Image 1 (spheres, rainbow, N blue to C red):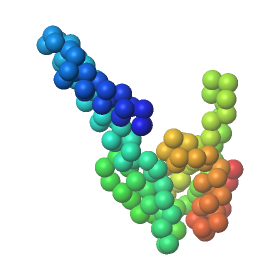
Image 2 (image 1 turned 30 degrees about the horizontal axis):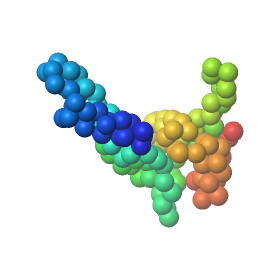
Image 3 (image 1 turned 30 degrees about the vertical axis):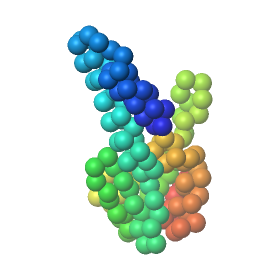
Image 4 (image 1 turned 90 degrees about the horizontal axis):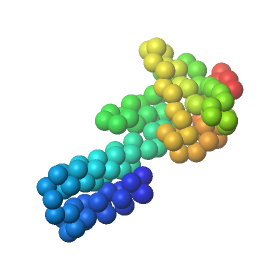
Length: 129
């Protein structure tokens, strides 16, 4: 995220100071805007999960959703092998038939640690691994 923002700034400076032809300016300017937008949205969206005193806060790209304990029916970890390594996903099943699937990128740490924190906070009753 920080790397993308840095490269975006470098490309923006390069468009203004170094590139002299119009197609090059358009191409590199579009790349700079895309990288800066990606970095800003990634900064806004992560981490997606936070524990409040009485609710679990799920933050998406645009909206924020509060999940109280009765809104959560099951929290579990799903593990599978992908490209030679084990990938863990944190799955939160809500009572309104929505499944929130969060990866390590989404929660900012290992999903097992997040499940332990949710269990300690009283959210993961009946949770499975």
